[in-house]
Amino acid sequence: MAEVVVENFIGGKFLSTEKYLDSYDPSTGVVWAKIPDSSELEVDQAVQAARQAFPGWSRTSVEERSRLMQHLADILESQQEEFAQAESRDQGKPVSLATRIDIPRMIYNFRFFSTVILHSTNSSTYLDKAEAINYTTTAPIGVAGLISPWNLPLYLLTFKIAPCIAFGNTCVCKPSEMTSVTAWMLSKAVVQAGIPPGVINVVFGVGPRAGQALVQHPHVPLISFTGGTATAQHIIKTSAPHCKKLSLELGGKNPSVVFDDADFENCVKTCVRSSFTNQGEICLCTSRIFVQDTIFQKFVDRFVQETRKLKVGAPKESDTNMGALISKEHLHKVKGYVAIAVQDGGLLLCGEGKESLDLKKENENGYFMRPTVIINVPDDSRSMQEEIFGPVTCINSFKSEEEAVQRANNVKFGLAACLWTSDVSRAHRVGHKLEAGTVWTNCWLVRDLNMPFGGTKSSGIGREGAKYSKEFYTEEKTICIKI
Ligand code: NAD
Image (cartoon, rainbow, N blue to C red; front, side):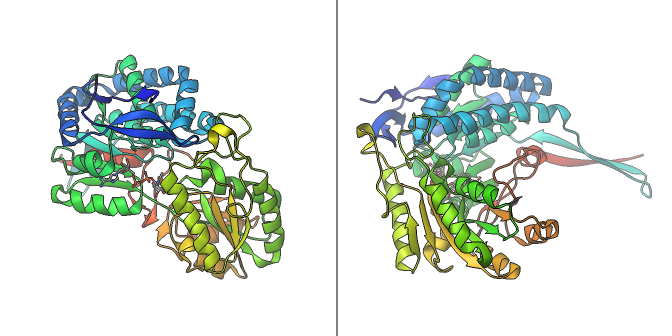
């Protein structure tokens, strides 16, 4: 018996559907929720509700929109514990991680964008020769389709909802079918906060049915999607007939480049964290580490030592570092990449196939795996080229700066990179050459939402963050006045 039955949230009402899908607790392998298997019909109802709400919401003053979003953030703040528990049950991550990262960021997304709109200005120019003034006006666009993945369910969904509604649009959200419960809880908070019916609608179901219906709906002019690169390619094709505005945040194969003048201890500990946080299921996780040959062995030894300390197990226990992977199929896929790396000549040092798990009885059917470290995998191996999206890191050595940059860039992705050095000039030089939307030097996952976020190459199209989200969620027009 499922513990939770999720309902669609359309026009301010909670509605059941004809068909439901099972949603599993990854830490036990047991169905814990039933979620609507929505079709074109429900998506269309949600789009109509969002269209109806748009004129009123887009004319609501920025002060009032901001106030409502702050009120929503207050409500979410008072329910942090319930959200963290549910996020962990849905996704398999440790409750402590959801408490530390996912839930505070969900709240911050609403707080941040609710204040951005209060200080947002447009540009103007004075053309002295033509004696004319140009200025721009911005207006919300309409109904946005917001499609999100399972790895940071609320963190990412609210990074779309918050700017979307702040700038005066309404939306239809389609969260991942694997992690739907917390978006349903969020919908209840939306009602409590007094956000008008139809401004935020949430339709649950699988990508090829509910997600696709949203992508192809003629009255949804913009789609903000976070997920896999292959899905994005399909979305580009199928949305093309409507010339939709697209924001695509996609996969990564993120390198970390370690020079021998790096702050060694901080570097090792942060690289372990950047490789295995959230079971390695963050698009920004490090999956390839290139270490200068002079410290390669020392780095590998310390890295493995630190990795072995990570406790894999029940997400609800406070000392658990890594929970379960999202699904049985995903676990199988990730293990498959370990096998490929070894077949291709890599040397397995710890983790999958080396050490066994020590799980409680209730977690024996969960989708757990130990953090895995492999060295000397050839750069052209599929495990070095494709996104694994799990707790697997490959470490290789390099001799020169030029070689390090060339090999770090030698993938189709360009989402994020880390750089470890105490040489300031090198930090600027290499940081500039690394092909990634974000380069962290001597740190990882430090974010300022004012700055652009997004991938290069196959990791995405478009940028998110204060003014970048404004560019996406509004349409700008130039007014020219002769004086
Ligand atoms: P996915 O592409 O399988 O699914 C993402 C979402 O798209 C889900 O809601 C899914 O139901 C929906 N979807 C699937 N097919 C669809 C279709 N034909 N039309 C419309 N919607 C469809 O990705 P996932 O497995 O949920 O997430 C993992 C991926 O997300 C990884 O590649 C990861 O790197 C990426 N990701 C990127 C970022 C980023 O900011 N760049 C952040 C998190 C995750």
